[in-house]
Image (cartoon, rainbow over all chains, first blue to last red; front, side, top):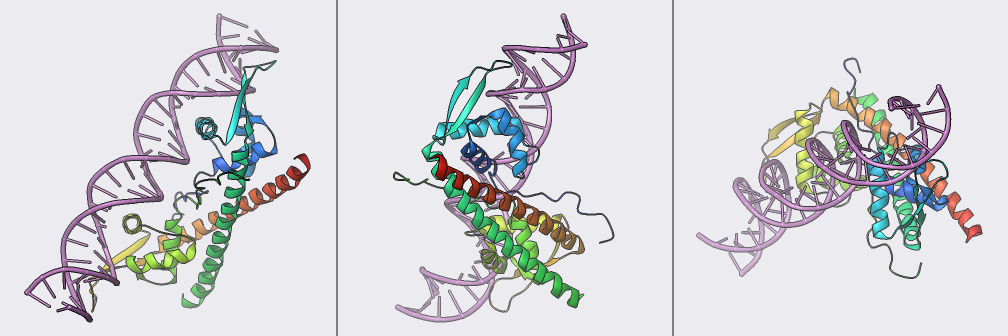
Amino acid sequence: MSGAPPEEVPVALPRNYLRPCLLLLLAEGTSHGYELLEQVSALGLDRVDPGGLYRSLRAMDEEGLVRSAWQPSASGPARRTYELTDEGREWLHAVAGSLEHVARSLDAYSARYRAVLEQGRLRR
Amino acid sequence: MSGAPPEEVPVALPRNYLRPCLLLLLAEGTSHGYELLEQVSALGLDRVDPGGLYRSLRAMDEEGLVRSAWQPSASGPARRTYELTDEGREWLHAVAGSLEHVARSLDAYSARYRAVLEQGRLRR
DNA sequence: GCCGGTAGGTGCACCGTACAGCTAGCGGGC
DNA sequence: GCCCGCTAGCTGTACGGTGCACCTACCGGC
């Protein structure tokens, strides 16, 4: 309350949240890594490192969740475009469901936290 | 839709979610590891491994977020009881705020997912 | 020629997580 | 007495995701 604030509280986004984000963006339309890199920030992910993003895309490619194809660009280097597969779409549905389950757990946490706050006002 | 379902979709709870849970439970009252182990399941954490929980408690002890004391038990082995410190309370407030921020991000995800579902019905 | 933006990628260290296993106190059944 | 199961706490280790740094290559403009 008075002294030093907690130096660095981890923001604690879900584990492996990048993958669901990429799948969702690819469900909205075919895209490529560099473009996805700019779009994921709109989904709560801040400061995504490019390396991890490209690795994640490659991994999902090898797992069959997405399909990739090189596409030459008129201006600039070639792009590897990614497209969602049927398996990836199934994965998206499943992971969206589990994310909603996570959201409900977080709501339960918040409710219990607020209850502690009110009781804490009495016990202090 | 018809073939094999996604073998294992990671439930993707927040990174390091155990710590906020332990802090919240300790804010409700002094407790010890084995008891906390049974209580965290009510907060969305399923199948928490004891090793990780005890390690997490020790780590928070060393960081000054909690205070520990050995307490002999009338029946059974001695317990190390944990109590929240002021610093731990600050940490709890901060992390609860960031968890609500995460929940809002997940809501944004869900909304965008549902939008894709509706558009997908048209484009299919 | 060089710089900045676009586009993709590797190497590596760190840390949380999962799984397995271990010690020890106590109580009850055979 | 002996073993089993429950309580209670702890260690060792391997795996995987994350973050940071760094690199290549194409293109256009100064």
